[in-house]
Amino acid sequence: MGFHQIPNVFDLNCPTRMVLDRLADKWAMLLLRRLMDGPTRFNQLHRDIQGISHKVLSQTLKKLERDGLISRQAFATVPVTVEYRVTPLGETLSGTVAQISQWAESNITEILQAQDAYDTRADIL
Amino acid sequence: MGFHQIPNVFDLNCPTRMVLDRLADKWAMLLLRRLMDGPTRFNQLHRDIQGISHKVLSQTLKKLERDGLISRQAFATVPVTVEYRVTPLGETLSGTVAQISQWAESNITEILQAQDAYDTRADIL
DNA sequence: CATGGCGGTTTCCTTGAGGTAACCTACTGA
DNA sequence: TCAGTAGGTTACCTCAAGGAAACCGCCATG
Image 1: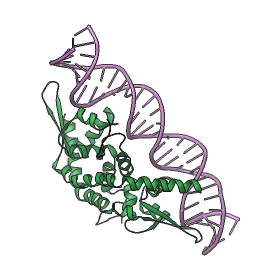
Image 2: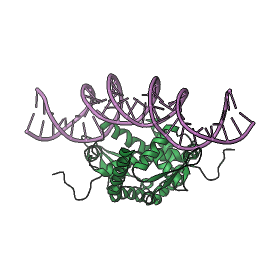
Image 3: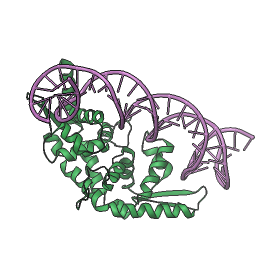
């Protein structure tokens, strides 16, 4: 009856899908990766993560905070200072996130080769 | 001078970013995860992965094939049978992908709680 | 005096992702 | 003969993500 003891990720209504959708976002992934190097301020993140817009950075930070993966701390300096840091829950993802970006760096060459080969084949056909 | 010995993922022009963008896609992730359970045919994938459209499934499979993560094999049956399977390169991602979906399943409760807490706080403010 | 930094929000606009649905060949079963 | 299966491609349209830019308060620096 649509009841599963073990949640089925492939099921449309599986809440795990929601988590996956959230995580499977390049900006979220990149932000998490960056914050794992240490607490960082808004504009510092904006400078470091090239290509992200002011708005999207703000939105993505909010989503991650809502999910409890990062926390926001404002200091009453002038002008106000805001620091974002990974929460303990977020930390439990650090191994995985590190693994992904390390995989990407290790296998970029092989992927580019595969793309070349694919495109060449496509040209012939 | 913009030269890095160690590629910088946060740099806009880092090819690793491209890989991350590709991987950070819910359908790609879900497909990889599904194909790691064994070679599967097009329409079977379409039935299993709820919510994906015919078109997007086709497009995502192509991208993954182009990146060398999965391979496509057509059999001259009638009607034609097409099987998709993870390549050796794709296999090197299996640990990571499994980790992600396992993390999602393990932490969904905590995330939902964090969202509730966040939304409650937001209501008060 | 005005520019810039800080940490955002809001508005406007564009573009591209993705859904729907039709079409394709070729065959089988009712 | 009509429907269904298999594995797609194509055309069309819509909606929402995201870029650009202005604006906010408040202060420091040139």
